Length: 122
Image (tube, rainbow, N blue to C red; front, side, top):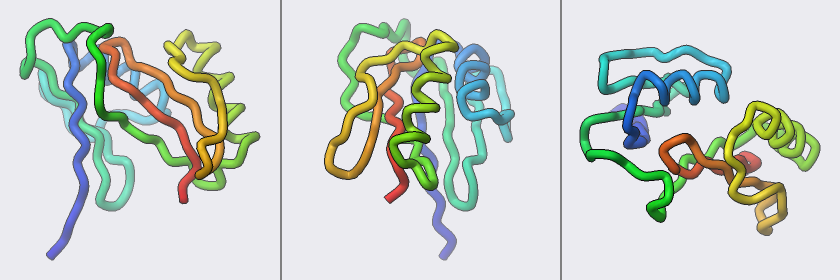
């Protein structure tokens, strides 16, 4: 059996969210419809942006999950460089780089308030 992981992020506007994530990830969507857009993140991993499932998602509503972008070779220098790049782009930063025991990490949010963690790949 072949297994893949599809992470779904609920958003208000899938095309706008795809532009945001495409800019952060440096890639274009692999599949697009007006309300559902995916990014192929590599063998067995996709990120989907889905709108229309919930009305008026508010950024201030607490989120209990995160999309985690695991950096290959993600030491402190790589995490700090990506943090500075995202901050310069105007990405909302929820927590600046710090160490959580598994390595350096920081936490950001997309325009809909969904959390995005950057951490080293274990």
